[in-house]
Image 1 (cartoon, rainbow, N blue to C red):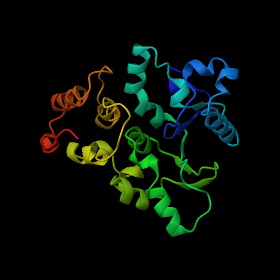
Image 2: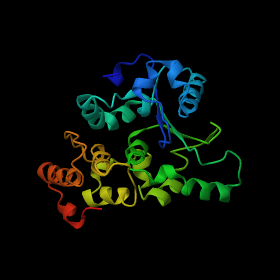
Image 3: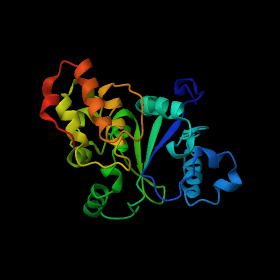
Length: 236
């Protein structure tokens, strides 16, 4: 949908790590085809899960973006932060975290989750006001507000930012860049694209440009911000 804010009754949104054989926008046009893919289970479980909480709509990046349209892809990449910010609730599906374990084991499982190592999930964590963490069996195991101390240790994002007590835009460019250090993306261009929202940047997405995407991001930050701490940060 083009304007998330207009969805009657609000909407839920999913944050997850991509796996093999995800359901695409083209697949979802024919449910019989979609059901044959390995990723269908996640789509189905997501929908069943949010229906428990009376939501009629959920936005899932794998099947809600027409990646064959460069214009739509650019629009979505530049709007992604807004999509998460406007959602009623963001469900974080931790596919590698079991539902039952003691407190010390759970911390290690959560800390070691692939979700914390992906580039796109950083802005999804920060943008969403209400975040519920769900285990591999779709059981709610925590929320962003209560887990803020743990999440700060894992991600280096301050509790005050996670709890919306402090605006992330008030943090220096270098500090915001440091939150992304060590995170990985499948495409090298996404190292830059996944940070657009954290810096309030809007740029065209041009897959195939490689590391130039990060240079374009740095140039745009310099053009729009007086914060010179960017010079303390090189290309990752």
